[in-house]
Image 1 (tube, helix red, strand yellow):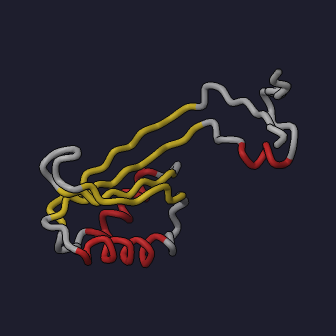
Image 2 (cartoon, helix red, strand yellow):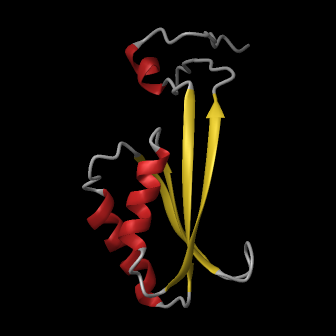
Length: 127
């Protein structure tokens, strides 16, 4: 018999750390690449760390980074960066400014998705 107690509000300090924000805005940038070779991933990671680790006044959290080869979502090779932020316009400006001179890019597209927390429950499982 399962004796896991599910609660609506965090009861412990560990559960409080797990609590999600009521609103979450994800900003995804896709860099359409001219070509993909062994150095592209390193170039993009280096640029990301140089620019965004020193966020220049923009509050954000880095979520993920990757490269999709042509065919997975279309004909373009895409480098993608996904962030969480409440300050979308400043993040867009910073990203565009810092990647505008990237010679392997043909364009940058962006997606902004806003999520609202509907429900959140907490439980602990003893092992």
